[in-house]
Image (cartoon, rainbow, N blue to C red; front, side, top):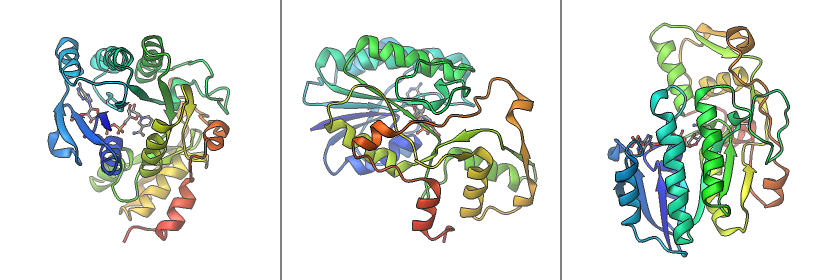
Length: 288
Ligand SMILES: NC(=O)c1ccc[n+]([C@@H]2O[C@H](COP(=O)([O-])OP(=O)(O)OC[C@H]3O[C@@H](n4cnc5c(N)ncnc54)[C@H](OP(=O)(O)O)[C@@H]3O)[C@@H](O)[C@H]2O)c1
């Protein structure tokens, strides 16, 4: 079986490629960082150039025995002027291709499509994005399901790893190492998921007849501050005294606060969704 992973050079894509390789022949889609790929046949995809993207995707000759997991996206902190093209138009093109060939499609979305005022969120609660990234991911969901009604939209939370540091923690560590303070929100609640657990869940979902929206996150809800501190402790980042506890609500009204997700459908499908403390316990508490 063949699997196209877009964003295979990203944090999720790299772990997904490694785990999927045992079972699939993989096209490992990347944008600018082929050196970050972790297996599979490298495939350059430029989501900022829709016509080139369309012809590259069409050239793959996908059929109904193939599958696509679309992880590529411009994430928070990336170029907002490109978010519409890459996140919305790019996702639509991927969905159109998958629909026209009959390929199974899993599209990765996010808990931040919600405004954080009505948690816990069931799987298919309508979107209420507060910022540009969230709006692009929300619009992408609609575009994908319109093009490919059998697609599965996975709404996930913060993704982290205990073998490779996630981007958020790496950013905090960098600031602390430069002697700069890090501000962590004590009023933002998320359900972080281990990257391998998410990757395994996605591979399991390729085999299941589920479509529409599905929440897939870790089962432990905790504040962004608590999660951030646990990660900095785990990675033994120095200068942790320079971490400040702040209220997101006092900084911006565009940060969703309570993003707890109802995971009952994912759990009824048998997905393993351990929380942060569970994974940390298994890893023995700290790195090394
Ligand atoms: N990370 C989180 O905490 C989190 C939370 C919720 C949802 N998500 C969602 O999960 C998915 C994966 O996130 P991630 O953290 O693994 O992302 P990431 O590490 O930032 O990687 C992004 C990937 O997208 C590719 N990409 C970006 N712009 C592109 C373009 N113009 N053309 C081609 N490829 C492009 C990148 O390729 P190159 O690097 O090769 O250019 C990279 O492979 C995303 O859909 C994200 O919205 C992430």
